[in-house]
Image 1 (spheres, rainbow, N blue to C red):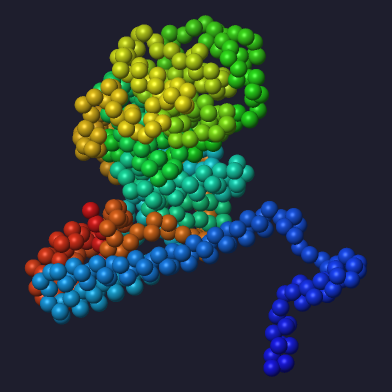
Image 2 (image 1 turned 120 degrees about the vertical axis):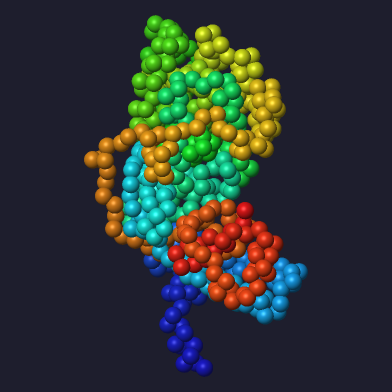
Length: 526
């Protein structure tokens, strides 16, 4: 027994072995303990980040393992209950349960597949910014088309945007909504983080506004309405977008709108501005002259032409554009979900007038105008806006305590501007604008980018930190995506059921449609 204790003592931490000596020295009033101790201050930030990342990875790994096990049990329970209620023989029940277990095993094997950038064929670039780029890509196994968002990790760390990107990823994975662009999976290599997302070939609202100059009130009502639903869906998950702008409002091939974040531009850095710079009446030179009177006053047409001239440059600059950011966000004095409704008001103004309400040639002047919005919010007479439109915009571009939407999206939905809108049928209606889309790879509705500036892709595959984050479930009620659809047949021989009528009856009970991944059949609910 003593030899066993002696052997175990070799593996005890050194500080534990010396604890009695320290206690004795303290009691005897002896010299201070000279043992070398490692405290938190001596650890580098890099080491702390690695420890925190490892801890989070391990916790999430086992949490997901337990969750997957529980969901697997629940799926079997549901199947057993459905079979018991249906007119299915005991032999067929056993065959179906065996088939379920087989597919569960294949699904687990599929989850362990380490997806990497090599699994995709890189195609046309449709967006770029301070953190990376967005490309149309094709999954090599299935030939399905996606949008790949490629973010440089070093830039995200340097600019402190890691939490923002993580929050965006988690939101896109969690929210099941027609209003939000779908995220299918994410992975990383040594240099980049990759988000594989739904590709929407209709372009974005920025491109649409540049082509049409302005929208009619009926067209604006439709797209502002869909934006309201998109913002409402993320607010229900306690997520604040903070940077909603036309660049992030994407259109599918039918012209319906979905919210995303393809701009990849950082928020404007206003940290260099002193508080006095935001005072009412201060312009870029610090004089008492208003920004509106700093130069010759432009007509609406002149302002529109100047805005369109600089719009695309601002959208993809590393500085970013502040035109849609709420004043409380710029001032960094605390903000809530109300800031997204301010952005909605600024976008609606641009749809109807042709340029944002606080646009200036200098982004810092735009910031000053936004903070001093009472002095700068004006509606040009030549725009001929209806009283309802002016009232809605005015109640969105106002002090946060009086802003419409502070008590939920229902406040905005009930505004007279939206009278007659059938909110529950908005995404089933014909869109106000149908983009021209010739095929699934068509990118004509996006800006053209020079490929010469593109960087080569890393050849390393996703490592142990790779995580398919959707958690899409086999025979899951909530899985809404026909991910990696493939024209595999559902053969009766797989099920070993002689009675095809019973098989169809069983499928109709669950209201399931059969789709497939390479070598794996997966069912998903409508």
